[in-house]
Length: 239
Image (cartoon, rainbow, N blue to C red; front, side, top):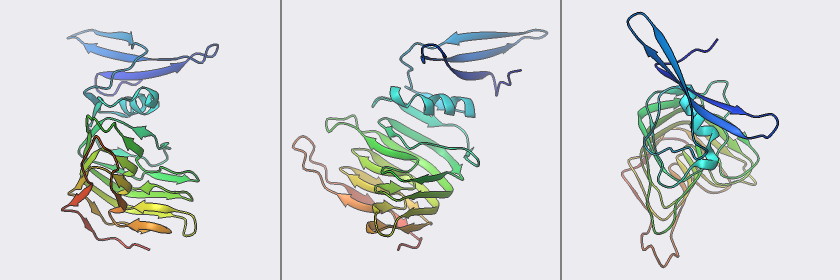
């Protein structure tokens, strides 16, 4: 039995003999007295330009295709997501992400490696495009690492604009080994953070802050854009 949320279901199948992953969509079309199902396999290069996450199936397709992410991706969240009982691996994201003013709740990460957060590392080239990651609330997060570069939203941000993000919960680094720990972003290098709020507890060793652990400048000769923080506020405890 297959349950289709809305009118479509995304699938991902790994072949046992080759290890190759096949992805595609199953679409349900309802008539007045009949129903039909269409199965379509996506090309190897999955395109996430103007991609909408509107159910867990589309989220899983996007998250499992991290090796296909690129700087021109534009991903929009179209629903609240509750991560209770689910595991999310932090990855490097290169594109734009619009949270649609939705809430991601109960995100839990317990790691021994660096670059932890909803997005472990966001990066684009100095020449652009300069993606925006925006419009999201992270509720009851519990993100912990014994390493560095840890944030409720982003572990390390390079050349991306983060705006209108609220974090509530805990972002905890080890008191003897963790640096660059922030309620929203662990470290930002080159670009802007605006209209962000942190209401959670933040702990770390060096470079620990309520919004950002470290606001780092750029030595790039191709991009003269010093990082800056605008209209942000912290109401959480920082240790």
